[in-house]
Image: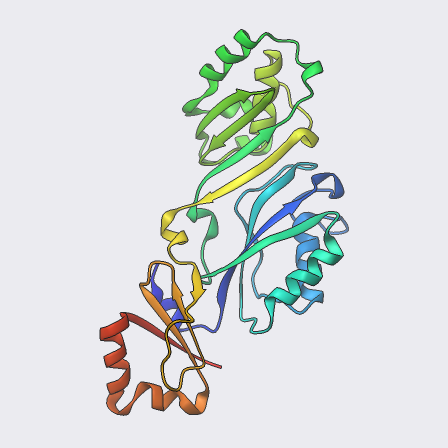
Length: 283
């Protein structure tokens, strides 16, 4: 992740942690004429004044009718207004279907899925419908946990993917199946749930499945950008830092930029000795 890239753009990356009720949508990905998770997120955020140039990337893609407690939606934007007000208005309007839990600021123009460490899914199938014994279920859990070709648990669309090997760990606790893996093929979790609970590969309903969480790699977590209120620099309006303190961002008015840099870059050289990598943004 090269910090020089953020010196050459006026954009920032934003990661929205969202809840959504899959029953309220036709699908996750945008489809013309259909109410979708990404489509509604885009439409309402745009209506409220938050815009971006490229598409929405996600931490985890979910099948039709599948809900999420915490999925991640990533965009790059040059928005400079009050994002907290937009989030409040979005949640007021969409609280029955999508809710923004939080937003984090980071590097722009990322290939976001590359920074996902793992995903966690929960399958809550009604206990009264489970006919297999706990012993049989536990044997099946041992069989399907591990790293291997999971092709038999996907659909035609999944079989068209180049890579079929996945790593997955499955547990069954208090009548709930928990799946943790680095990535999942289309319908993999629902088919695995059917196999565990019936002994046959069967696509179980999406309404019982929830994307519980998406875990990011430490490399990206360290590059979240936070306000730095305990540092004051003459001529600088606002200061931010990455969590790992590797980069300091100075926001200056155009007319003050020369003063902050100093004659022959003397000021900025001194600041770099003290603070390390520095990015200056005009406001």
